[in-house]
Image (cartoon, rainbow, N blue to C red):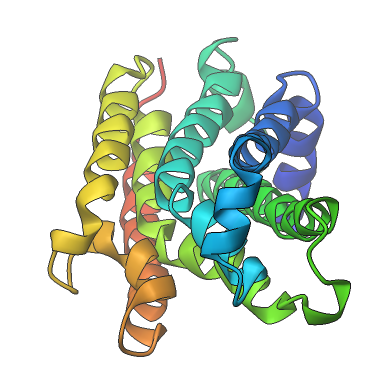
Length: 240
């Protein structure tokens, strides 16, 4: 009940901070980039992917999904934290009859919901883009499109958990933002990393030779561990 109250309050705060605009722009921007890519090279790409144009479109989009996820988690975590940091309202918030654990959990859930909405927009937008490119409506790979968006998202949850923890801990956002940007750039080389390395999990969850159970399961478990550690630290945090 306390988590639900805190989450409801955070949703109200989000409306005034433009976080939903960030959520929408991330997915729409990625789709617009691929729309431009196919628009400028339509004949070439259609010939290249003539056996399965939907698979070609999905592959072109996915090449930017890991870096978009890492940048998105970084910015959303920072925006959520800045709602309180920017107004110096931590004392007032934590003085309310709501436990610190509930406050931390609500912000964690808020970020996951925001990222999930962005993934849903990407899934729906991929279908719309494919139809706009005149791909066959009878062969839309709905399950693959959902996998394109949500499986890498689950595999990238550890970075979000870490980013939110750091963003809530430090008023100066330089450290978490620098870490997130570094992780996003490093994700470009994910194909060279071992399977146990978390930065490789979004890529492996979609293109891995084995089952996505390891990167997805590992992402969820590691994110939950970081969440528990972060909540423990947040409960004992001194508030200025």
